[in-house]
Image (cartoon, rainbow, N blue to C red; front, side, top):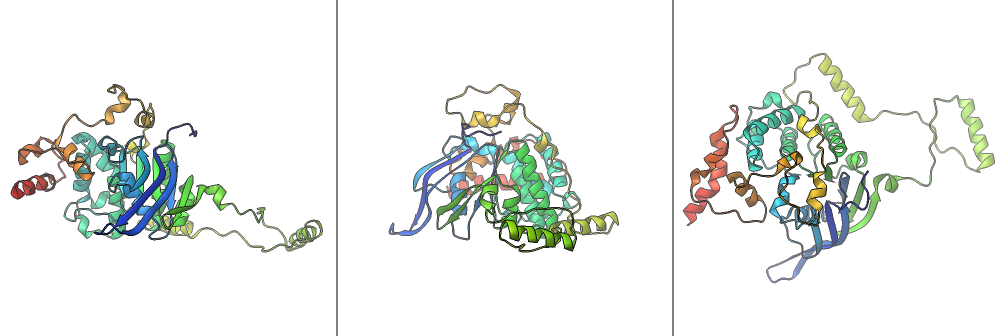
Length: 393
């Protein structure tokens, strides 16, 4: 069980972000002196209406925006620190994926950015595609996918590096009830593995089902925060659930309530199943009848590499304030290679400048892609930035 003495994954104190115009006049105070922390092994909800500061807060945590004032630490370090990026998975509100790559090529591409070896990329790609139910369309260009299918690929790419800290911005947007339930089950499975998750969603039912704690923003300020169960508790009513009663029994109970408490029964109703459960039952019945569909097939279990429990707690190492020696334990094998082209590309995705490259052909040092992947397309994507740089010079 997580204790308050455990260093937080994210710590914000007086966090403020002010956007200014060309003349340095304040245009908007997107985040205004926000204090919160995200503890290891919890699912933390970030709620609020449009324009409340949720996306700005997420971008500052990722190091994509610089804070105006206050303190913000991720794994005990500055958000711009490159070394922490390999331990973070991110699903943006919109999945910006290459239209002409298929799911196999897309996941292999992101795996190479994280410096994963060929065998690891291949196994994780197959497991993730099965998990999100897209194995049968693994060779179709993503540009032909529906929004929900594209969203599933986005979720898979956010998990390709088996992150310790997962940031999900509207993860169930565009998903059908089957995909929504699977995402919520996945989050609970990751929580059981002591993963830390930041969930931002407008679908409040999703937050209610999976989050441990949450903050609600409005106008860039926190309006309420705390444990979900505590915030949702209705202290003005009492619910007593029993098997179905006869009308005479209900009348006698109401008489007792009037005599003892001076109150009457507000409502008597029969339990109803959730619409989500009814939908899933209908879909399951159709699958048993082997009804053909061109959409998402039955999703698989959580990917094996996401269910494996590591022996040591990597989070404690990351948030430790003292400088640790070069790790030698087996659990630390997630460390990046000493130097690789994939590292430089990953560095360019954050606010750290990549090291200069002298030859465009250096990208060929990355291990070959799986047989099903069009390696030339991925190499063009990885090498395009170098060629553009040479032309500019």
